[in-house]
Image: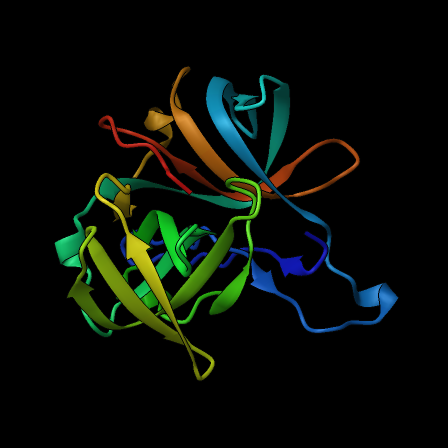
Amino acid sequence: MIKNILPALVLGLTAIASTALPAAPVHAEDQKPEQIHVRGSIVAYSGSALKVKTREGEAVDVTLADGWKLASVANAAVTDIKPGDFVGIASLPSAGGGDGALEVLIFPPAMKGAGEGSYGWDLKPNSSMTNATVADAVKGVDGRTVTVSYHGKEKKIAIPDGTPVVTIAPATKDDLVPGAVVFIPAEKAASGPLAHQVLVGKNGVVPPM
């Protein structure tokens, strides 16, 4: 994850980028902190600290940086994906060729271009994240196949039935209750993960990324 830099966060009403940007080569003294993704459920929240039980079963203490931001996700549908939309799609290579989506995030317009590209992701082994503009969305044999474009390249990704499709929604600190599911892009620090943003699940919708 050293090639990644801190995920971008822009608040219009509420907007978050759940992606990491691949960094250009830098001098050793300019290297960004290593990035990690914390996925799990809240054990406790207090002021500037979150205790999270990760999906691997560990208890992790996350420090919340000054000015940290909070958002959640809301359910969307494959039919909400329109040409020109900017999306983040985690996917795995399909046995028959091409990629199959694991989840889709439809970014709000304010986030268009955030983390554009296709690169390794840690949702599942061998998964990738593609942040790109939808060129076209056509009905395929098995669900929907979306063609996306980034940096002059195109990629077709199948979205099987049942794939989580979400968009950004508001959240408040009152949503940080024990048991709530979180996705936290964080910096690796000596004292543990340091987070500038948190994505929390609410109303039965959990961050799928």
